[in-house]
Length: 229
Image 1 (cartoon, rainbow, N blue to C red):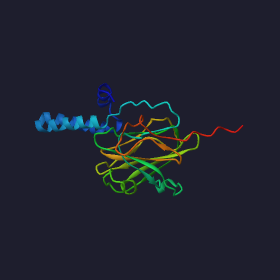
Image 2 (tube, rainbow, N blue to C red):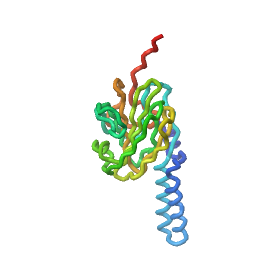
Image 3 (tube, rainbow, N blue to C red):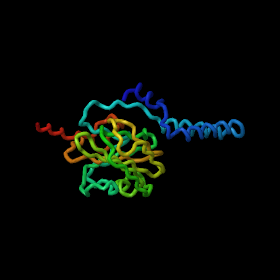
Image 4 (spheres, rainbow, N blue to C red):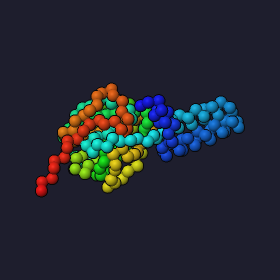
């Protein structure tokens, strides 16, 4: 990402989930101007932080039908075989899981990794451990989304709350058709997003690599077999 794109990303409009926090910061700043000047500075700093945290830049997905895109910005912290969340009702068969950790400095808007239909959404209450730890996938509060591509391949995206994050917002519904890179929700103040790939998917990322949600290709799905006529 060049300097122009970086500036454009930082100055992008905020996600609607940030409006109450931004408004609250503005009110505190105004009250500070009236009653106590240090409070005005605190309100201003909080407002600027919220504008930065809730930024929602536009993303341009690559035109590749079999590409699986990163569902979030952040750092890949693990790539391993794991069983998808039980609440989705899938078979207890391990799948390749790519886990992305989002710090408070990352864009927290989550995006669809591929075009497909939302088959099921399941919310699971849990703990608020550090999202950088592998056990966060099993123990933390999470929202699991099962997607099916037009060719019948299934992928799972899991929004996971972290040590500071206490609110997972999902903006999609079961039965909804999604485009690759489409916004699906946001997690507030530090979190993790896992994606479980179907069998045969070839991972193209490594642990420690930074992701750009909706743009970075993290895997390729097997090409669908041609129809028999």
